[in-house]
Image 1 (cartoon, rainbow, N blue to C red):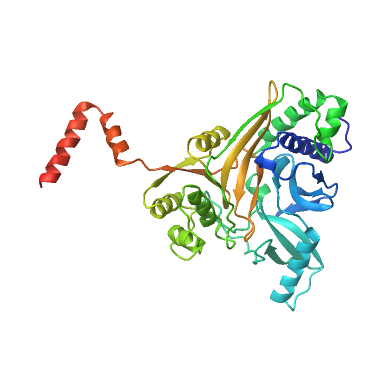
Image 2 (image 1 turned 90 degrees about the vertical axis):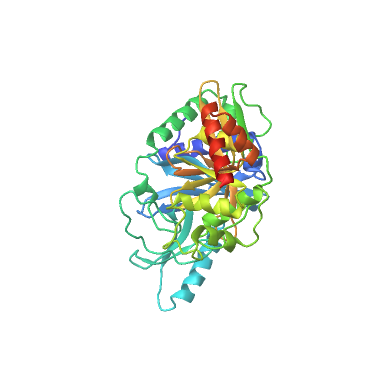
Length: 408
């Protein structure tokens, strides 16, 4: 495949994966079929000053219908990252940030603006002075001022709404996985006909031409009805995610503050009680809010098969990544005869505040900290049946102890 630069090579492979997903058009990319990928892109910068993502708007009938993100850092973040049905209009977002900045800092001036992934995948507008120094950073969606970076102790997890550099935190973490994906997609593209290769790499997506018979997919989604519930402010990604998941289990809370109070016990101040730092808070809150009818199993460092099993067995998954939480409701794997071409998770993300987002996120094996797998609590009958499975001598001893307690 002849391309001018490595950057263009990676972009074409990202378009290839995205168009493969669109060919197997399910709810992962609902509403994005037939949309063109804009040739222009917006650079999303890392906090360390390097480009991290290229965001391409998706256009249909001259209207924005979503966007896709393409990674540009080969050692830690490359190829297709995510797609969203949210529209992307960088000019209007920068104008909104400038208006807010003039209100907050009327005495300050700024000469440039750029988009920064200040807490991946969250995005902010960073306003700079004439020397390139930051004047203000405002989170897109809520337009709240992003706090300065704080000192973290070794091993301490990243908190919600915290400024941190993806490239510094995940340097080299995904290198082997990314290089494998590049090699697999390169080999797949090499074996395609010229016409089909052109459609897969193109900006419009596949028409009715059939893929090689060796290409197939598997996938699944949670069987309950999911509703996107955006977080109400910059620090309530956990309450919003729990609220979404509880609604799937027929536990509906119209006020997000009730969920936040159960989780944080302080009105939502992450500096005092952060559920991303203390997994037991999530488990305790779910048990309390469901009146004991639901339980949580915390699963560290989950892999793709773990998401698949939980979704098929129980339903949606509360997923914790660095500094954030969202709900995973589906999975999809596209395969050829010998290789996995793509693995994506369908994510209901409460970010950005007041809007939220639904779309596929490329699976990265080193990115997930904890899965909170929710399942219905065992009934008394089920617990007694479980007791019967114990050795007979132990079961009789337990019954005897219960009888003594009853007599006393």
